[in-house]
Image 1 (cartoon, one colour):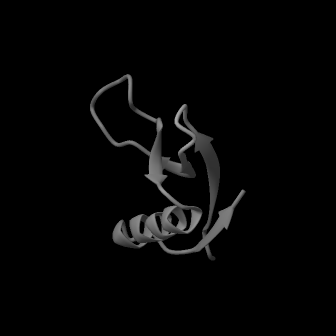
Image 2 (cartoon, rainbow, N blue to C red):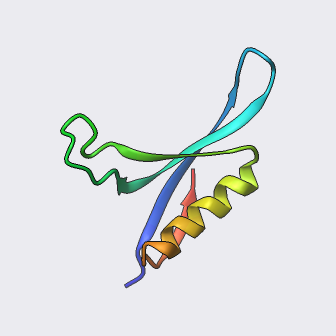
Length: 72
């Protein structure tokens, strides 16, 4: 059965009118011994939406995960 990864992308505008994109993938959490960070989602950053999606795909493939990526 194919696993479906749901991702969210947010467009962020800062004080200098520069736009960047932030996103996370449901079920992809930080793996650490620090209690404060356990089970927190990994946050990805990029200058464009396309670059962020490419980063999602690269991360999922690099960590050996296969399936479909759905963007919300």
